[in-house]
Amino acid sequence: MRPPRPVSRARLVAVALALALAACEPTNQGYAPEQPVKYSHAVHAGGLRIPCQYCHYAAERGRHAGIPPAATCMNCHKQVLPDHPEIQKVKASLEGGQPIEWVRVHQLPDHAYFDHRAHVRAEIACQTCHGPVEQMGRVEQFAPLTMGWCIACHRQGSDRSGTALSSVPAAQANRLTDCGVCHH
Image (cartoon, rainbow, N blue to C red; front, top):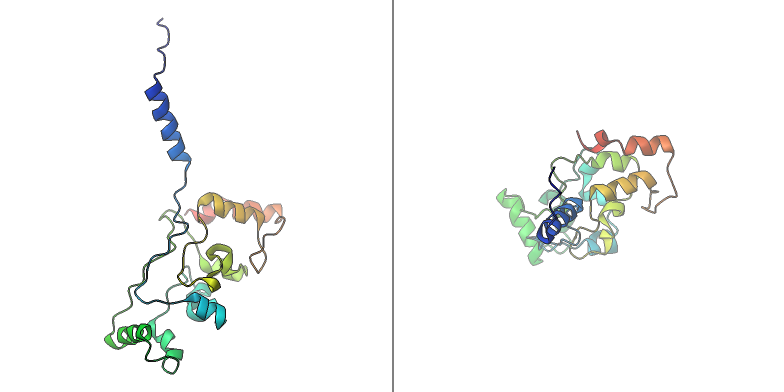
């Protein structure tokens, strides 16, 4: 029987690097792309206190919150600042029948299933995942939205305002952390 070969330094570094990369969950936290229309949630959701679901009405009925159609914006902007250059972009989109090509901010991997409807029904505040959107001039991805981050929230729970609670009942926590809840 041969004695074991000594492990080279390069091999140790390669294995350590592979393990470190495998342990990392990619995140787009802080991602804030420029959008085709300069829309401020700080003005609309913050200053004017327009509820999230006025524009993102699909959140209570479907998996995706959705981007509102230009017609939703024009409900108010037919009369409010109709000549503003950014509103003119929205109006041109509506009149030309071409949707605004918004840049997606929050993107989960294809193997993860997320349903806004379930979170809205559970009265989880939008800010729990999306952060203080009502203060954002340009929307950014606030939370890492990694599996570990989601599981931590499912284990702990939160109240309507997004404030973490001390715990959720064990049966509910077990159900919410079952792999099949998000991966199916």
